[in-house]
Image (cartoon, rainbow, N blue to C red):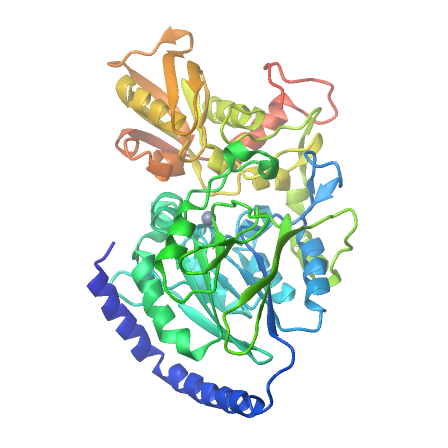
Length: 535
Ligand SMILES: [Zn+2]
């Protein structure tokens, strides 16, 4: 991280680099002021209104998900269904904008297309601006730069820089919609950048604390626009659990968003991403009046925020809610569905069936789960290690009962991690286990370990004993641990692990999972898993 004064220099540099654009902007502003002044001669009889549609953390969940926790629908979400809902909301005769707060990549087809599919889909859905999430760096920042020219909309971030100071992305965008001018600024949190990205994917980049940079841009834009919107990708990492909407325990809170909304002057709306802490109604900061909104992510809801103002008054909330994407009722948007089908057709191997499940395998963010156990088993078996470990943030989808395709496996684990072995002293292993029980990034699942523990309210936990393959853990013995390369290289705060890495295998974690499913749940076979697990 760099100092604040360094980033003030960067701000000046960005202003110099974009001086031409500033001039254009000023001319456009002059035109807008003339229009505003002229129309101001006759006082408007109806209040000005703006409808802000928003999403966050869709993460390339392309298809509807089984809505097993809801009684009002069978399936929820799906990008082509979401697109239809967006079009319905946009059809209303008033200024409407559409924003996303980051994490558009992940999933099998996003990975196979190097992010091209995701970038194209947001264009087809008509987004006005998005901000960069940590997952956009998943194929390396160089790959991100290659794909970004396809975006027909601004992709924002104001606080990531190249080493040396040049801004990595465009910090803000100005959008005119009818008579209303909106300034939108993109920001990422330090933890999202440092702890939820593979270090190699951000090598050569730096991040600055977002607050002072945000205030600088707000002050720069405030007098030019009617509405300031922040798109933030920060806070605690989202719970990877499909039914998180009904599970209050795993909700990650909006502490950082609330603190930011209270600290910054001049922000109307803060659209949050990364924590997936769905807000069924907007939260207004009492001191600054900033509205905070966020969805539960994965395209399961569309956020709708309607603001109105009388002449010369502040924006007031007219309506704020999350509209569920009911996949049973919404038809597919043809252009979005066609683009997804085109990507699938270009990768027919993803339709290959690797196994057949008799029952679903699902995730639980704060608990041991059938998915966590299976993936830990798969990693341990592939590495022939004593212990397998997987962190729940790495598990991005559940598996439904029935045939399992290669695409479904890659949707579970869409990352580039390889199975990695480590020779870990017992006392270090103990510290890893204790750290995991705090659930900063959810509860890691293990294979080969037996733990006697009691979980209290996060982060409290009581670890009574640990056994490795039936024997009590010994502090002075070395254990062969296997996990994915992200965790092995210090991801999600496991800074004690990198020095004990033994070997990064050629085998990817995704392939280890596919092999395991093929072996224990073969297609066209009545064979069931021998392990005692229920989802
Ligand atoms: Zn994120």
